[in-house]
Image (tube, rainbow, N blue to C red; front, side):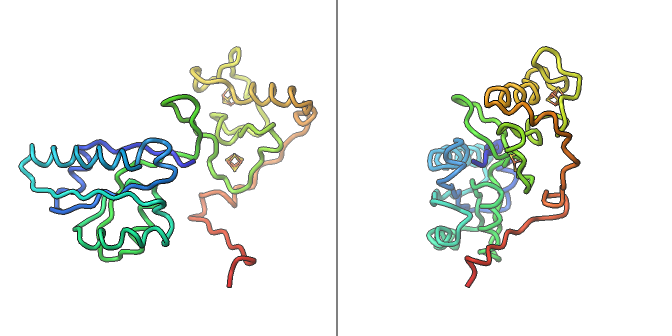
Length: 222
Ligand code: SF4
Ligand code: SF4
C-alpha cells in the first residue's frame, strides 16, 4: 500500500488561511489502511481545524467527506458537488489522489493534507516499513524476494558492502543488513547459488529520474 502521514494542524492552517470554506476529503483505500486519510482522520482533522480557526479568530467552515478512491474519476464524481460548494479542498489522499482531484477541478485550489511517504506494509501495530521504491524493473526474483534497492542503504545489487556488524547495517545500525536477510532467505529456499553471479549495473531508465512514467496497455485501449 501507499503509506502517508498527516500534516500537522499548524501547517494545514497556514495552507488554508486564505479560505473561509474548505472540504476535507478523505480516501477509503491505502491511506485509510495506514490510518492517515480515511473517514476517521477526516473527522479528527476537521475538528482540529475548526478548533484552531476559532482560537485564531479566523473564520473557517469545514465540510467532511470521504470517497472510496481519490485516484479514480468514477469515485471523484461523487465528491463533485461538495468540491464545487467549497472554496478549496484539503485532500487526505496520497499525492496521486491530490493531483487527480486538482486535474479534474481546474478552477479549485486543492491542497495536500498528507505527506505521502512510500510503498510499504504494516510491519506491526503502528509501524509501517518501506518495501518498494517503484524502480520500474523488479529484481526481487534474484534476491529471494527481498528488495536491495529499497532495503539496502547503499542500494547494493552485489552486496554486502563489507561494513555490516553482526547482522546490522553500517549506515543504520538500528536496522538489519538487507544482505544478511537476502543470504538467509536464499539459503532457506535453496537458492544460494544466485549469490555466485555478478549482477550487472541495473538499468535505471525505468526509474523516476527521467520524469514521470506512463504504462500503456494496448490490449485495454479502445
Ligand atoms: S526491485 Fe524495484 S520494483 Fe522490485 S521491489 Fe525493489 S524497488 Fe520495487
Ligand atoms: S550494511 Fe548491508 S544493508 Fe547496510 S549498506 Fe551495507 S550491504 Fe547495505
